Image 1 (tube, rainbow, N blue to C red):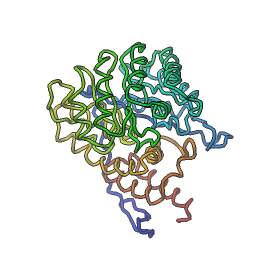
Image 2: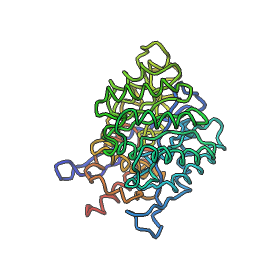
Image 3: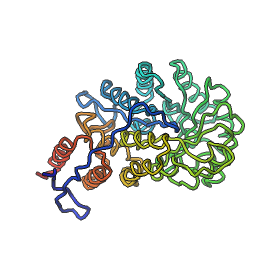
Length: 394
């Protein structure tokens, strides 16, 4: 008999739902991907810590690192201490640095494991930041700490820089200084204001095409210092246009959680191999890791139709998780980890489990089932029922 439960609907009623009963896809072991794929990984809160959850951060380190080992086992790299880990949204810099240290240590046990770590300015009191020089010093402090651990940098978009910069020239000055000092090629990070309203007008203008000109110019001035750029604008045409302008060897890491399947598959156009496809640095890969691994394995073997057959059904789920207000997408990512048994509770840093409605979770559950992503269906149903009981639905 199929598993079933009553789920809330958008109209505020309950309706029966029977799971499809389709087993999740299992990645083939040992296949080398032909794309670099980072999963921006979440952190697991410690629900037993005696803290004020809105004001303080407590991490369950064992479960957090266990999830990174899970990602490594699937062939995925980890983009550490990014916004998916609630960086700057509950996760402070000292805790972020400890997370980076532990993740790098875990990677040493896994041959070929990739870790790139977020370097930003979030430790600064933004009201005390008065100049571009203050921003540079902030970046340099985090840069030194991460590089001392042997870490590769993801130079995160800076709220402080967006606040004090007067023109694109200020961005050029900051990134020139940081890139000249980097010990190994970095990944740049362009996060749209749909993910973080404080980053509106990044690169010195609200005109996306003009902003792209500035970003491409910065990369062109330091091509040997830039591994790639991750952009999260949720606009596939803008990503493709920028991808085709990147210097030789510089990768486009898609951060488009709406259109990742077609962007990773690519179109083959452009004067360089990297112009015709995107690599990946995605928050959604945390929630769909087994499917992402299986799809990337199929793509590496030339099975494009299988790639789309596996990854295509995950796109509606991702679009739901990343629906506006997009900055609350972390809640859906952690919810998926809880449904699939990767953590024992649905509690988040900053209490952000409260940022989405029960109707949102119900639709997420249905979409996860449709995408064949419920790894332990009986557990998922039991936990969904437990969640509903906290809302008075028995």
